[in-house]
Every structure is written in C-alpha cells, then in structure tokens.
Image (cartoon, rainbow, N blue to C red; front, side, top):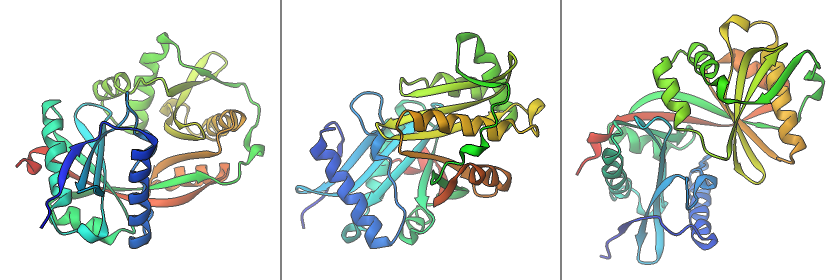
Length: 291
C-alpha cells in the first residue's frame, strides 16, 4: 500500500491554494460542517505555517498554525474523508509540534466546527481537552442608524497609545498586562490596523481590524475600558469601524464572540451581525504530540 508523505507548504501559488480550497469544500460537504481552515491567511511572507499530507499527487490532509504570543499555537486542520483513522492528523501534528517546540511554544489550541462530529471525535481520541466555544458572526445588514455622531472619534493608533491599549485590553478581557503587551508586539503586521476610540481627547476604547483579503476584514480585540463601560461607547465604536470598512468596499466583515457572552452577542446583532458558524476549541500540551 502506498504511504502518505508530510510536506512543509512552501508553494503558495494559486494552483496550490486551490488544492487546499478543494479539500476544504470536500470535507465541508461530506461532514455537513461549517469548516473554515483560514485559507486567506496562507501567504509566502508573514502568513500561517502549514503542512500538507499527500498520497502520490493527491492532497489528503492539511494543517496550519500561527501564534499570537509565542506561547500557544492556534491550529486548523482537515483530513480527506477516505483517509481518516489512518494517523494522518497525528502525523501532521507531530511535524507541526516539532516546529513549534523549536520556537518555545508550549500548548496548542485546535479549532473544530461544532457540527463536525469526526473532528471532535478525533481530537478527543488524541487526548485534547475542551476549552471554549465561539460563534463566528458575519455582517448581514448594517444598521447605519446606530451611528449617533456623538463626540466620539476613531483614529489610527499612535506610538503614545500603546500603554493605554495594554491597560484597556488587559482590564477588559482579564489578561495580564505582560501577556497583553507581548501579544500586541507580536501582532503588528501591515494588514492589521488598530483604531483608538477617543471622546474629547480622552481614549475610552479600541478596536483592531485584520484585513485578511481584498474583500474580507476581521474585527477583533474590540473593547471599552472598564471605566467607560455602560455609556453606549461599544455600539458607537463598532458601528463606526463597520462604516469605515464598508466605505473601503469590504464585502465580508466578520468577528468572533464567546458563545456565553450574551451581552456582546446582543450588541453585535444590533449593528447587523448574525451567527454564521460555531467552533469548539480544544487544548493540549505540545509535548503530547512528540514522536
């Protein structure tokens, strides 16, 4: 029987990306799932790292990973339905884990569609533990009437804003300032833009946008400093950043929210976002996947 091979993805041509996209669609159709493996983040410079599993010329498995803090790796993966339960995912993970360990990464966080039973069964079998669930929301119909034209201004971040960004984000999300500082330093790519929300010279919140494709933007790290919460700033900030993206002709605008965060869900819906998918996240120590 022919053996499969695990290869580092170094070819980011349209042909190679199309092969990954076709496997993604095949897995989605077979499982009836909302699988999304982050194909828009595959690029030669500064993109996700990826490994391919091939049987001859056929692509039968894929795994990509990235880290925002050099401590934990975020993983997307898929295996052709005809080649499951043959060690393909574990082989991909072993290769990726070896690369991650060189960078000092300790844990991995694997994203699985909540409606993918094969994916969930696989990560459970390998010993990963459930961590959290998150909804993906897409803008369906922008509620422009949510723009109230108050004294709030959204402007691009400046060097002197960094300390406020760290304090605002760490206090809003409950992370340490040292972790947040490290996270911001490691997520300064050209396609990622940070806006500060300022009310009469006082910074009150922030929001970041990752321009992942010519028509696709992902809103994230959106928060209001705890001192200024409950005053309607959140809705105004989100409405304004959506308005900016629509003016720049972005047709696919999305964000993620923890499933239990009802307050945020209601806020996003009030602007015109709707749930399009749910993902489960499983975590495991990297050394668990060592050969």
